[in-house]
Image 1 (spheres, rainbow, N blue to C red):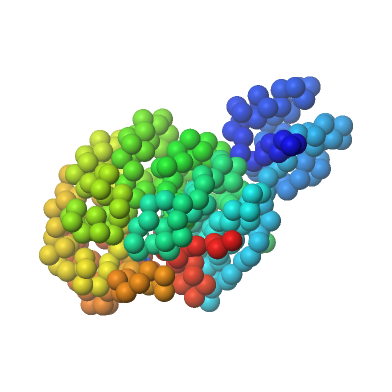
Image 2 (image 1 turned 60 degrees about the vertical axis):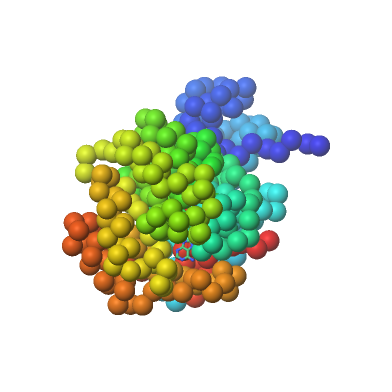
Length: 342
Ligand code: SAH
């Protein structure tokens, strides 16, 4: 079997330098190649015109840029765009571009599939897949950013697509090292279902993105029912890890809380949530449940009046609480709807 060419897109500066060592004549070539890929968004080695032709030819022997073709694109009536990518082994993933008053938020995947089987999530319903490489993570951002039309580099990036980012830590870390040269870590958020060892590992990183935690229930009894991972890492252990998570001045942890009608949307639940989070600098993002045929009957969106009452109660208790407006649901691009059937 011939070896697959190395994807330049997924190499950090230092790894690129090591990989290029046998080929290049002068050290500054590393920067030339890195900038062509990460600042200009070139799609092929031939397009790195700052390089001599013979060097490009040599590079072509063992490397590719690694930007994937967009296999399908769905545009919602609200402007949200859902991209489907087909990877080299046939795995498929989705990423979403959510424009909002000129600023774009890209929602990207960290795994093709997800093993956590949360009851409210379509990705989890379809089951486990594989980890994405650092290059496959970066590629989703570039395929959109350097696409048509190209986007400004001042975007927000959220790891809230398919998969659990903290079960793919090393590739996530390398992708962030690359992406954060252009996108400030303050604009990057990694969302976890509560993988405690992953949170502890990230706490030790020198440079950290924002952290969001999918909480969704105020007690173990109910969290167990909708998130099997809670049996491994119950709420107390999760909160303990979060209390120790180092935050820069003024920064907070985001708690995502899906409101499911008559399941977790009462004022007593809001009070319980407020008590739970009182030792952690937090903001709370309420997500009205998005139903889907595969999820069964439980996922009923809350009444408009309970959303407002829940939010108001949290604000009365001193929290910042926002409601995530539903985007792209007419093309199944909304939270928990990414499935990418192959
Ligand atoms: N595994 C990570 C990253 C996925 S994020 C995590 O769990 O945080 C996906 C976000 O969409 C999470 O906050 C998730 O809880 C939310 N979500 C999943 N299914 C949903 C649904 N049916 N309705 C609304 N939000 C949903």
